[in-house]
Length: 129
Image (cartoon, rainbow, N blue to C red):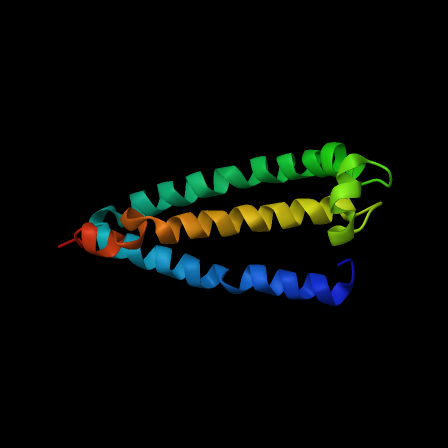
């Protein structure tokens, strides 16, 4: 899978559900938090969410350059095991990192769907009055 069409389909599949998740998340927060507190609560939520982005970008760059790219060079153990999926050589480590992030996101979504507390949050938490 190093061809452009494969990566385009993967990127579209990844990004397709993000607006649905974000809008559902926002709707729940707006229903559960009293209007007079929404500004502070939603701002704090946004701040904590956004704080993780620079850390994630820094970690991604370091992992790609220092761990995954060297590990996916021809002859390396990881390249031998996973090279048939993402290829070997330059760019293969980043591809493997993207696939790993996609798999972790899928696992997190499956956990959320399987969690009764998360799945029934709309009925468990009362709406603001």
